[in-house]
Length: 372
Image (cartoon, rainbow, N blue to C red; front, side, top):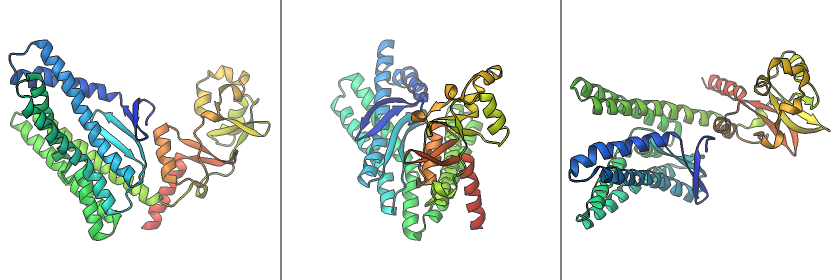
């Protein structure tokens, strides 16, 4: 879960959170329901009723989105695939499943679980709509939620990778070809084609004067195209780095400095003198902290000569570290999640080396060249 995500609770050990962008989309959905949807359906309501029912309906909609993602996550857990978190954000929700399915069947079942959950919710809210026709607020909310969950389920079954339907399609191609990489490429091409169809449809609607639907559909197409390119690249990265570990590329000549050295001496001797970007701070032959250029730049230059390393270092218990046998894919993901560009490599309490994001990227480039 990213640092700016607001933690809510856990389900089966899975942290559930809200990205700050969620508040924007929640306000937008509430506003659309209160100003547009409900007034056109229930003209006799008061302004307070419009906004109150709209807010409750918006909350229930995002509960539905959460249950959609929980469907994916619970099935993934059933297959022993670790789920790092579920986060609601501006585009809906995302389940962070940190391991790829081991077979086409696993991919198929995990992918289809979300849309099926949405369709079951649509059926549930339709029953509520029928049973409570005489209670206008309940009827109105249930009617909208039945419709939007059905739409969510059907939309996600579109075979546009990385939508759920695209993953279902990839699972089928994977089962036929028995080649995950080839299946990903085919699913990616289809996903891009569907994205461009959305964009063209949106542009066509714009020329017809339907600005709202045109912009919205074109935006969906743009989002899908960006998502499919990013997902295919990520899958390619996983494929390249699979089986490769930290000890294969880490720098073993890790620079260590005493805790009492001044920042000016550090800059002159290590950062400028040796081209280092980070050092491990030692005291009594034990690593006590980690110091980077970022730590030094936070202090005015005129204070470097009078400030010692231990005063500005990041204490070791707060440093994100890795181990020599950790897979590079996992390290790269952790760097992205934690917003760091390098990690000390430690084993049995001792620093074995250093690994940077640049090291991993360069290694991937080498692996790509060797494949050609």
